Amino acid sequence: MQNNTIVVLISGTGTNLQALIDSQKRYKYQIVAVISNNPKALGIAIAKKHGINNFVVDHRKYQTRELFELAMSEIINSYNPALVVLAGFMRILEPQFISQFNNRLINIHPSLLPKYKGLNTHKRVLRNKDKQHGCTAHLVIPELDCGSNIVQATLDIQEQETEDSLNTRVKKMEYIIYAWCVKMLIQKRITINNKTIFLDSKKLPITGYTVTELSLHTIDDI
Image (cartoon, rainbow, N blue to C red; front, side):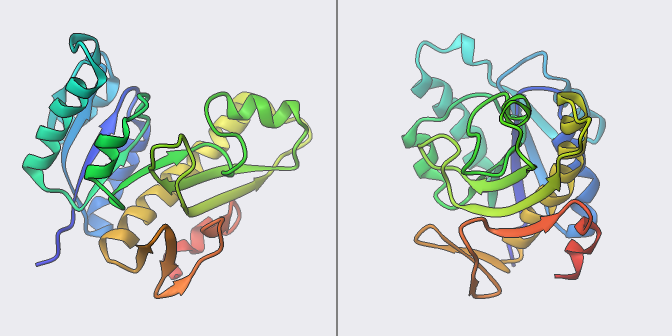
């Protein structure tokens, strides 16, 4: 039987978690656990509301990163998930943790990677007067925001754009492409071989599978 389970790691409001929850029946994956490093994360209440097993592993209570990540690993491995999904998880992970989940650990980032790794992506895009922006679902490797791109969604930046308006538009795209990415990985329609991403056995470009803001509604036709 195919393993369709995922564990989601969060740190904050849980908006991407909610989007993943909303899509799990339609896309036939199952969120079996939610882990937060932040005891005040609003996403924990979302998990509880939906009856999902939830855990707080407060990084401040551990003397080292290694001990913190070991505690998380023990919970994750007890569920043996097909994927570990970072959804607003705001801790940099050590190579030893990442290696345990080789090609099974993914993240969603609010930029068109490899551009604008790290924080404050909307501000940096506007400051540089870019014409396009978007979000990327990618593999997690030890180098921050450097893992292979799986899927990107792009939008055209409007003349009166602000950080808030970009955040709203990009978030809407994140919710759609991330759940789709999980589905495609679970179904093994998207596969990874030596850091190269394949869709239905066809190699994807370095940007991953790309969809625009206007064509997001067609993503399930793939």
